[in-house]
Image (cartoon, rainbow, N blue to C red; front, top):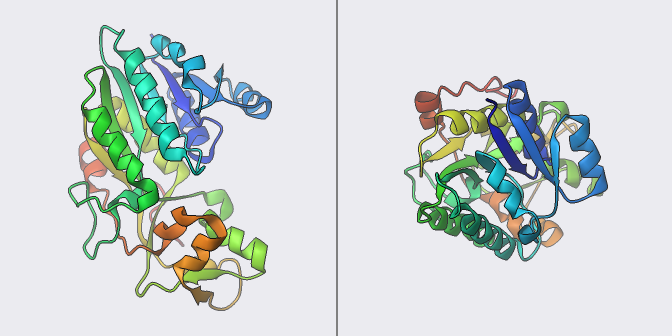
Length: 282
C-alpha cells in the first residue's frame, strides 16, 4: 500500500521539489493549496489538493487523519509568522491525539536558528537563533514534547536551484532592483548551500529512515563565497554593505545572511545515506 503524505507549502520552492521526489518514489501526495493557481499547479503534477491556508488550519486539519505523515515546508514570512506556525502546530497536535499511532511530522527549521559560530556547525552545536526565527527553535521543542507527534527535523542551509545558477534569491533581488549586486560586509563571510532537489531527497530519507526527535542538517556546499556568487550576475566584485541595509530593504529576517556559518551534514550522510549530487559551485 502506498504511503500517503501531506505537504504544506506544496507549490513553493522547497515543497514542490519534495512533492516531485515523493511522487518519483511511489508515494501518494496531498498538497495544501491556498489559491486557484496553486491548486492548478499541483493538479498538473498529479497531487491531490487540500484547499486551505496555513493561517486557518481549523478548516482543513481533519484531512491529516487520512495520511501517515505531514511534511511542513510552509512559512508565510509575514510579521506574524511565529504566531501562525505555533497555531498550526497546536491544531495539528490536537488532531493527532485522536490517532492510534503518532503522526510522523517532518518539521522544517533552518540554518539561521544556529546563529553565529566560529566552528563548523553540526546538530550538536548550540542554538543562537536570530530573533525572527527563534520560533522555529520553540516549535522544535514543543513538538518533541507532544506524545501524538513523531517529529523529525530538517534544517536546510541556504536553498538554491540549479536552474537559477545556484544564486540565492536575495542576490537576484538586489540585481533586479539596483542593477548591480551587493553583499554583506561580514569579514570572511561564506554561505552554506543546498540545491533544492538534493534537499528534497533528504526529506524523503528522513521520512523513511529518520529517528523520532532527531534533527538533520542539509548542507551540500559547505562554503560558498557571496562575492563569487555575485559575479555570476555581473563582471567585477559586488559592493560590500552593512547587513542592516539588507534588513531595511527586505525585513529584519534578512540578518541571517550576515551570519558567519559553515555547516556539516555528516549526520545525514552517515546515518541516512544522503548523497547530494551538487557539492560544489563549478
